[in-house]
Length: 111
Length: 113
Image (cartoon, rainbow over the protein chains, first blue to last red):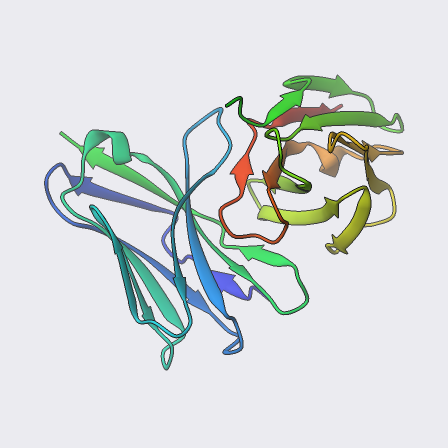
């Protein structure tokens, strides 16, 4: 049973438009949430995080929104750039000191 | 500052063999975590070491083990390899442990034949 779900394996977005990546979770007791970006042949890179006491965190072109009642978080990238083409993982540390990753969404930015 | 390094980058082993992977964290980082990435299961947490002690362990069989040395370098060992162990093995380091803002290495691609 997946505790962290990224239901879209891939997403294609036109350059300059907004990319929205989604992540759903099942446990309402998670304290903070992370997004990672991964290029081929490289390890994941931390992108942005959000604490459960907030509903929005912004860092440049990247904004993460948290909807606790829906157990849903989303990553918005605007405007999307070619270098944003990568696999994006949401990751959630649980209270057992383990971290659970979603299976990732591959984002393609189209020229 | 040098990043997290992992050796070897690629490895081919036969079923039943054992393998040892190495991870050197960023200088000053005391925590190293290991992950397995497969197409079917995604990224899964294996274990975390902090100051030479295993702090957390994921849901993997005992064939998967690790250790950390006094210089924070870590090794991961898999014994009696199975075909399903073919994966990208990633390690990540942080200064004080936990999962916030981990720095990942490029991974070791293990293929079991």
